[in-house]
Image (cartoon, rainbow, N blue to C red; front, side):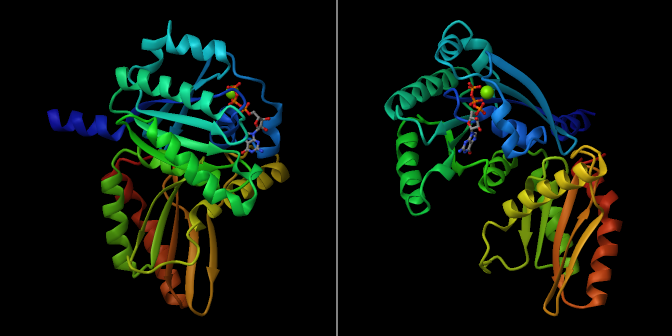
Length: 321
Ligand code: GTP
Ligand code: MG
């Protein structure tokens, strides 16, 4: 009985996610693109966030992100750190802190970050911290790596002992999807069961690679490979697929007068003399991408098996409709 209750709790999770950083750094822009189907050119219409804007984002059907988008104007930040300290910082699973690469007050930004980290350490010492060095599109291409690494060092020095990951991001390219997939990956319930299933499935189909995407955000959930040693020449292929499929859904929605959330497809395929790949609707909350050996038979077999594997996958991983 107890283990049933525990597994039900593990299968369905609610996570408090704090989204913080200076006013104008791009917090609400990213949230709207990832979870509310905005496109990058729409976010200019967003006004500054007043105090905290709460929203709930469902992910994979069994994870609820309780997003606290905290307006970053000085007066609000002051209040989060003082009068609202306990209510804002307690029970947080994740802090996403956004640094605006264009900011001319780096030292001041870092001081505010330190104060936020101190409050988080006090009330949620086990929280993960993700720092996004954002608006990287405004930095010249050849300078990006150096400037990003420099910022990462400064951020790490101010992060106390909290678990920290940093990403370079911009709403104008696929880096946005890499950063948010990295964040959500840490929160997905039953990830080990999902990966175990996909590894076994890849072996059965002799698939070179299998990637799972969440349906509404099109963020990558996880990926497995047959050959761990192989280095693919396109390391950013997952976030590129996310970006392309999101744009595709927007185009479909515009042309069929539906919403991007409901615009979908069943199967995209590419068949070449050396390999086959396809991206298909899997469970109600996921899409699956497979790279399988060349040939019509291998392709048909993989598609058929994928369709038949849906229910077992849902049952074993708790990712259901
Ligand atoms: P507050 O709500 O006041 O805390 O600000 P915020 O962090 O929510 O900022 P918001 O998302 O409203 O974005 C402010 C501006 O930054 C918008 O006009 C966006 O167009 C712009 N912006 C957001 N992301 C990017 C980016 O990656 N690159 C560039 N160049 N501009 C961006
Ligand atoms: Mg905002």
